[in-house]
Image 1: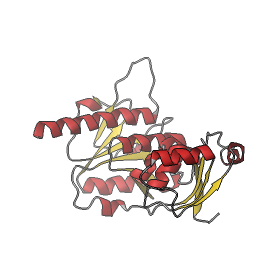
Image 2: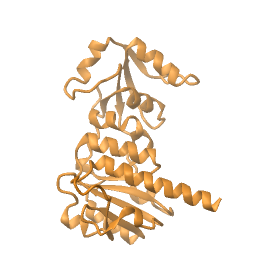
Image 3: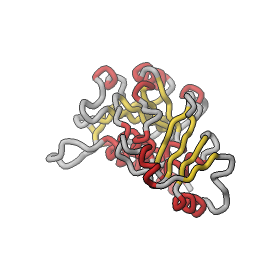
Image 4: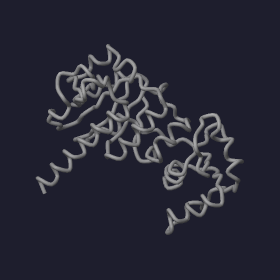
Amino acid sequence: MNKSSFFIIGQHAVIEALRNPKRKVLRVFLTEDSKKNIHKKSPNKNLLNDVKVYFKTKKELDKYSTRENLQHQGYVAEVEHIQKPILKEFIKEKNNVTLICLDGVTDPRNIGSLIRSAASFNIDGVIIKERNFPSESKLMYKAASGAIEYINIFEVSNINSTLKNLKEKNFWVYGFDGDGKEDFTDIEWKGNNILLFGSEGSGMHKHTSKYADFLVKIEINEKIESLNISNSAAIVLHHLSYLKKKSWLINK
């Protein structure tokens, strides 16, 4: 195993990594059944060209997922990191950009699920503190279900300075907080926006929330304390996707 490589597991995580031309896949470990399924998923292109393929039994593959208690589904791959996108370069001369910013979110499953939602609803990228991003986590890749191959992950050294810089470049920052004054569906979403989410346990850091132009909430049953962060994000992103589609139809 190379120093720059790591293992991912699961059908969607492995297949989408093979499909991504930016992702270097070094080795793939498959069962006979999973090999047949790969060809069914991509009948017009052999995803296993130029990749070392090893056939294993399900039991032999279990060693790659036992520690995390995950289902490998007959798919394991050794991959290298994708080149990191640079936020400053990405936003140059762009309009109507929507980014998610994670403040203190560290759980790999939550991060993976959120990445899956962000990619599903065509969000431009996810900003996360570099030291909080579990870049080699099997849990995150499995939860993302291959979506990590289709979205920009901007790893930054400091969330506060990043938000400050983005605000100076005409981004609006919306902090999601249970005590927010407005429901997020009442906002007129226009221009460049940052959706700022804090951790489930403590929410946004106090000093980070000061960079929010607006504190908004998701109205839920008052008997329920809160939603899981990945569920919260999915609700918000679906709404924004609906508004974007509605606007496109009106202006068509």
